[in-house]
Length: 330
Image 1 (tube, rainbow, N blue to C red):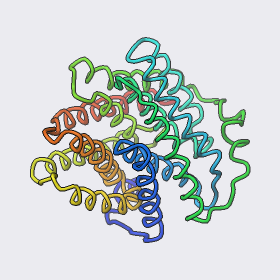
Image 2 (spheres, rainbow, N blue to C red):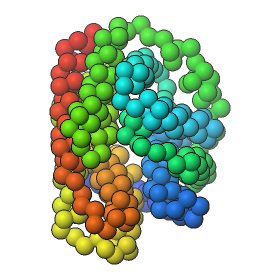
Image 3 (cartoon, rainbow, N blue to C red):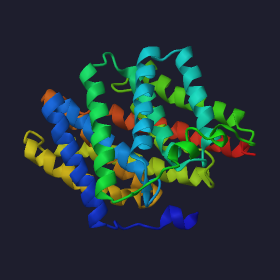
C-alpha cells in the first residue's frame, strides 16, 4: 500500500490513451454544443470523463450497452436528488445507495466505478432549482457518443457476460460481511457534507459531498493515510483554480480552451498516478470546467472562496469518517 500511495510521482503519458480521451471529448463537446449550447458542451465533457473511468474498469473488454445502462442510472440518481431535495426521504435514499455500495463493492468493477457518480449526481440534483430538458438530452447524447467512441478507438473486445455478472448477478446484492453500521456511518457523513454547506448557504453546496465521495471509498486498506493524501490533492486543486481565476485574464475564450485541452489530454495520466496527484487532477478538471462555464455566461462572476471552504468541509468529514470506519471495521 505504501508504494501505491507514494509511487507514480511523475506523469506517464500514453499518447494513444490520452489522445483517444482528448478526441472523444472534443467530438462529444462539439456535437453537444451545436445542439444544446455551451451547457451541453460542459455536460458532454463530464460524460466523457464518466464514460472513460467506467470503461477502463477492464483493460481489454467492454460492453457499450452495459456501460450506457450504468451511466443512465447515474442520470436517474440526479433526477431523484432534484425531486427529493435535502430531506428525510433523501437521507433514506442516500442510505440505501450507500448500503448497496458497500454490499456490491469488489463484486463488479463497472459498478464499483459507477456508484461514486451515482452518489455525486444525486447530491448535485438536490441543489438544482430547475432541470432543463435539454440538459437531460445532452447527458444522454454525451454518454452515447462517449461509450461508442471509446470502445471503437480502444479496440476493446465485447464483454458478453457484463450484465449476467454485474447488475443481474445475485452475488452482487449479497454479502457475508456485517456492513450495516458502516453503511449508516458512510451515508450519514455524505448527508452531513451536503447539509452543512446548505445550512451556511454556501454558493454551490454540492462540492463538499462531491469531495467526500471522491476521497472516501468502501473497504480500503490504510484508509486514513489514503484519505489524507486525497484531501491534500483536492485542496491543492481548489487553491490552484482560485489562483488561476484571480491572477490570469480569462476574457479570451481561446486561452481557456487551450488550458482545457491540455488538462483533458493529461487527465488519463493523472488517473494512473498516486492518490494525491489523481485527486488534484480530477479537482482541477471539474472545477475549471464548471467555474469557467459560469464565467462565460456572466463576465462579472467571481470565483467564490467557498470552493475552498467546501473542499475543507468535505475533506474533514471524510477524514472523520475514515477514523470511525477503521475503528468499526470487522
